[in-house]
Amino acid sequence: MDAAVVVFPGSNCDRDVAVALTRACGRAPAMVWHRETELPAADLIVLPGGFSYGDYLRPGAMAAQSPVMREVVARAQAGVAVLGICNGFQVLTECGLLPGVLMRNRGLRFLCREAPLQVEAAEPPFTAGYRAGERIRLPIAHNDGNFFADEDTLDRLEGEGLVALRFVAGPGAAEGANGPAAANGACRDIAGIVNARRNVLGLMPHPERACEPAHGNTDGARLFAGLASSL
Image (cartoon, rainbow, N blue to C red; front, side, top):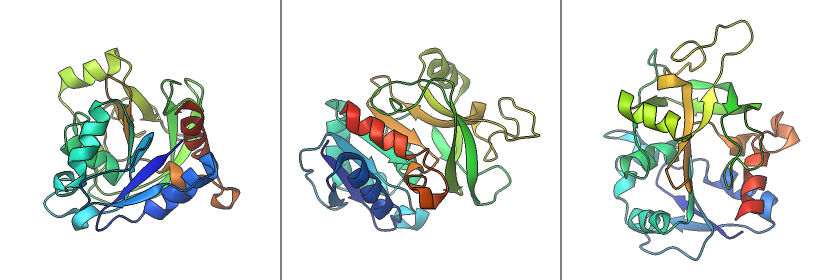
């Protein structure tokens, strides 16, 4: 699998993603500065986490206008796999590759913790390393991870099986849509979605931060291993 990681001013998880990809597929990804207008040949394009442009205006809005994003959109529309993690998810909604918007967290506080999640569907390329209905744990670290969309869009995402990951309640908490499961307040506890073609995934949790035993959790490594085996 050949991968490319787009680096914006303010990205802070680009190296983490590069290490995770290198471990999964045996070769380092191309690191592409956001001002480039072309991308190398790649089976996977990653928009990493961080705070592109310092989250000015709103998270992902300015990054979505970076020169390289025209090529990212074109590649996605041609069927190339695109993964957006945290700030990358925000960029994907801002450039129209995914529906909805990521708003300020409920409670107006930055959240940095490990989150329990449920894998809604085990499908290539993004969730091929998991089982449908499986519970996993991935770190979250965001201030604007509150996924919102109108009811028609939410119904379509649910009805077409486009919800990839969902926050679930931890021990001792009652589960339920918009309940305590999604501490950020995300509609229907949505943590990650794919597009109708299933070649674009945006998720708020950070799989690249759960890839090695030293992290205390390797659930994220299976996402990258699944990508390497599928692409």
